[in-house]
Length: 330
Image 1 (cartoon, rainbow, N blue to C red):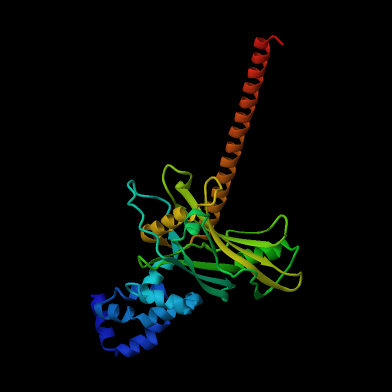
Image 2 (spheres, rainbow, N blue to C red; image 1 turned 135 degrees about the vertical axis):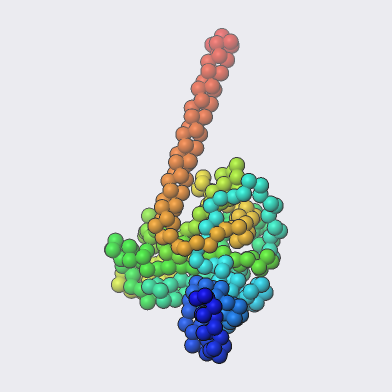
């Protein structure tokens, strides 16, 4: 009864009034909910200009002509990219039987946005060819910046201030949307808020990390992987903070960088099969810490095995030498 009354009251309003004075004020989640109220609201709430405004306000990089072209080919245009990229990718388990991965697309589209205290600092769209032998056989590595490019910011740099580092971790956020134009799917492979901020042990540059853990290939070291986005910042004490590097890699549980071929297949499965859930910052940090501990444990275990094999090989060689000397009559 209430739904019928709501539909009746909405029907008395001119659609232009609903569109201009009500729907343009809603965020994406609310607009998607409003679309289920009635057939009239569904028709009004699925208009692409509403979703284009929401998407470009959330991710300024999507205003880039290359991004606009790719979005225009998606089934529901901006509504498709929003449903795939918001709020957070969750892909931690695989079905028992995996379908073969689709062929690699000609390129991956990356839409990258960096914010400080919610205000955009940097936006970029990069296209990465994916069918070259170099990409498929080398470690997966996507760069958002050009070589030697420096991005100035309004943030003040502090070299020896732990509080400043914690503030940067809390306030510097990042979105990295990866789009597969061949299948028309996308995913946001960033935790949005940083899971760690640290200084490089040698250069003392600041590294801010964003990660998303995903299911990989069963029965392999890539059964669990994490996308790691690293923002490297530099500057002079009291001066402006500059962003020097923004890159994405994928690591397995042995700390090995996943190849482009493996990583692309994992990303494609995550785009299609991954759930989109509310961002859980505490959970993201815990998963990052657990993954880091697992990598450390496996490296230590591997080092112990290699050390044991070296000792065994040395003893075997010593016994063989003693036996040879005994038989030779030395």
